[in-house]
Length: 437
Ligand code: ADP
Ligand code: ASP
Ligand code: MG
Image 1: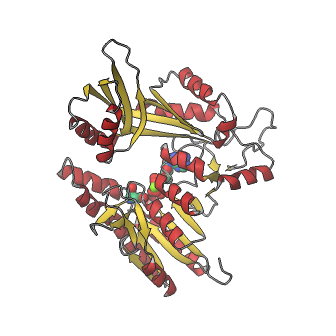
Image 2 (image 1 turned 90 degrees about the vertical axis):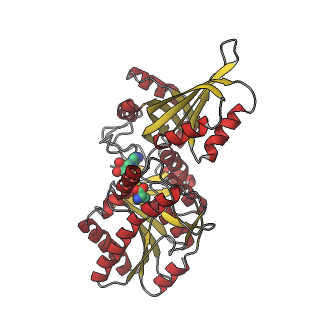
Image 3 (image 1 turned 135 degrees about the vertical axis):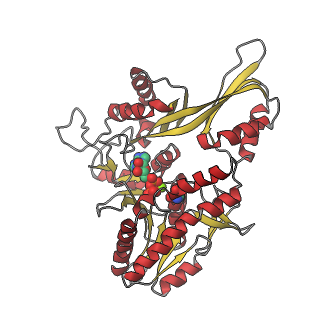
């Protein structure tokens, strides 16, 4: 930042943080306080409370397969309401504010309705508002397609990505994500009450966490932040405490070194409980078949997660192939597969699937982590149905109803809890640099 230039902050408030009139006024006070402290402020707001869920439900009451373009027209209204109301609250506090839709704010996306990707940010209108000493309030989760000029939405949780994209475009000093928990935790604090708040976490670990279900930050927002070097500060909208800073792995390591502490093998346990599994029984075991199947799914815009294929064991040379997807995409997936014709002898589905994952950059240098995960889950009588790994993640697909137990036992086994201490350390000693109470 050039000396004398006021600091620029992007502040994003999630659904719970703007749910009722009191919350909107609280967010407005926080925005105004940042402005009064001298910052140029852009605030990105989500739809109030459960508005987006209600809008989705109202669409499904009308139609089994709502047209994605119309879905975006509908869903994008929620965040506009929040912004207009918050602008009114800020005016009453004696400050100038302007609310903008995603399109007015210059969020340009591709045309994939309901899961569009930001391809450009033309923030001129925001810059103009800031130079006129206004606070810019931007409706999160939406943009406009370059091709069709239609309204698009960025996928559930997409307001995080709006905020990070604006922070990158405006070269903001920080992107603050205000939410209903105090930061990024070692597990979902709603499932594990003694989960620890991470003081620092790397883009790499946070990406894996977001990709495996820690919905506190949308995956795409972390990706965007890493690619553009945006510092994210994820914190509570209900108190002034410091939250979690998402920064480079080098910075996390430098801090650990400074404090002379070893990197733990595991940093967090994440979970999902809203997946479905599709099994294609009896597919031909020959080149090109998997390509055909997954191309059809990709063309239908379906994200596939874990995939396994069994070697044929019988004389018929037929294999079984299973994959997991978001439960909400199950109908679209089975539609896409039936359009392929006789690629398999049958399709089986299970819509009560979940996944538990452990994440930690430190597992690269700690052997035996996977063995411990399987042993702990086995000891709890939890059947592992599929496994996938990355260098810093181990995921196990399990039955959705066992997910909370799995999260709790793994969190405990890897001593991630707020009260956890290493055996060799004196009672009460902190052993993890990236963590606080
Ligand atoms: P917002 O509406 O503010 O965007 P979200 O509901 O999208 O909030 O995300 C916050 C929620 O994420 C928390 O209430 C918490 O239950 C959940 N969550 C899941 N995993 C984690 C985690 N590891 N750390 C923090 N929160 C988590
Ligand atoms: N309102 C949208 C959702 O509920 C976007 C967001 O809150 O980030 O997914
Ligand atoms: Mg969210």
